[in-house]
Each structure stands twice: as structure tokens, then as C-alpha cells.
Image (cartoon, rainbow, N blue to C red; front, top):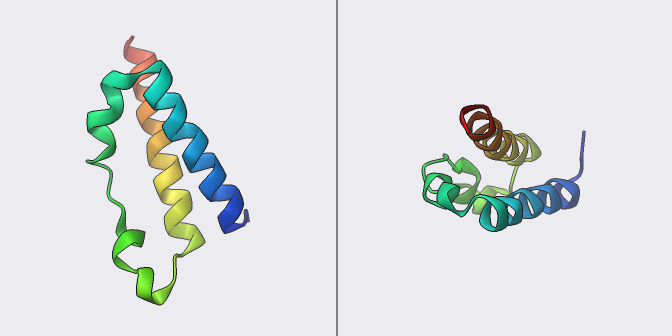
Length: 67
């Protein structure tokens, strides 16, 4: 499994890609559940980060298929 740093880097790169290439999708990023933000006191879980990254990638893939 990827480290938290690797996952955070991929999340950052994917978010940047959305902002630069598909700014119309930014409004949907806020709709993606980010349960890891509410668990900061317990520590951020790699599984939750991976899930968030997968959601961002799914958003991009779904958009690419339709447009």
C-alpha cells in the first residue's frame, strides 16, 4: 500500500489537474465525502485517503466519458 505522503501527492496532483484542465468540476469536489477530515484527532487513515483519491479519479473518468 502507498504511504500517506504518496497518497497526498496524488490527491494534490489530481486536484490540480481538475483545477487546470476541468475547472467546471471543482464544484463537485465538495460533494465527495471526506470522512478523514473529521478523524484528524485519531489520525488520518491511508484507506480513507485512497478512497478520496479514487473518488477524484472517478469524477475525472466519468466526465471524460461524457465529454
